[in-house]
Image (cartoon, rainbow, N blue to C red):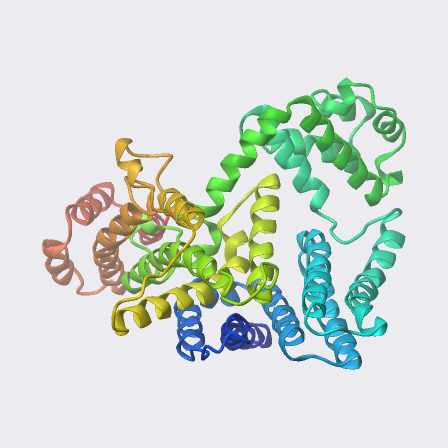
Length: 509
């Protein structure tokens, strides 16, 4: 049903494809500007095509996940920054475009609080590029102060929410109201050596649930790090009714508990973060956002199984490898340029990738956290594909020089995502991602494909039973062709003399 929310989400998804095209065009122009080389028009088209084919960009708008709107704001900010870096020369225009970019970055931060830490990196990037341009084009003092417009716009966008949230929740709340809980959950997982929601839930309930007695609240916090250390802030909060504890105080206590756990076992947190980093690049076939419930029962249509495997998992693995190599190729210094005159947008995207790789695993990593990284992967994968095609067309076959470090990173990421080594394990293989035994994408796709036939036969049996009159002959014809599981299912139902409602329950559930 096309309700307004779904229509707007679809429009945003289409807008994102267009923004990827524009951003890819800017990247190509930045890389060739001033070098005498002609910008290649194929790369933007291929980048947009890759984005249009990538299935999660189409699925997520249908389940109204925030990644679609967040990606729109992020891409708009990058496009505006790219325009400023390549076209703006006057002070007034520079201030205007940097202010627009700052407002967009502020809105992106309000959409996803983790972006807050990236804003200083963007500000440093703006200062760096302003300085790099000044080496060849001297600028007056007002133009040198233009980067302040970006900072002020970010502050003016974020501060109203900060003031509102701080007043509403009784203490300082910068942006995110869930970051403290996520920090505590990640720190607790590292401290315990395994994922368990109970300790984190108990800590929050002791500060939130008004129906608990004092003894029950103290019991829930018996395993808490702050409680065991006799932290005065926590004990003071427990001495008051839960209704008197503000949300800001709960956030502060959860943050303090998370930091307490981290300092108690810092090595465990580092090991856990490395594991989360690996998980960020691996495929989780049964992630909720993929809508794969009942795959082993044949609930997934075969076209959807094929689309998931080809347009999601396979395309993701290909993009992952090509994007690293394409970025390294685009970041190379062109002849006649100083070391610092690197393509500005390529540098900014590199900072964005590194920031996410450094922060996402600190809490916990799920597949949809990499969605904001993949629009840029489409761009640099397209750049590499075009470069390879051009090399093949040129006489003499000029070599493409890619840094050895980039080749190493691409090889490591390919190994982590494809997991050929998972075949060394018996199913279920905890190492499996794209290849390998169950629960790899390849193995699960085969299961979902095979069981679809059984599911369709069972639906035919249900339809025949539902009509009631004259169904027995048709039912026998259906079950004569049905897979063994369906024939056993029919015999067991008739042997038990089950009612129609029982048949429906046993089939669907």
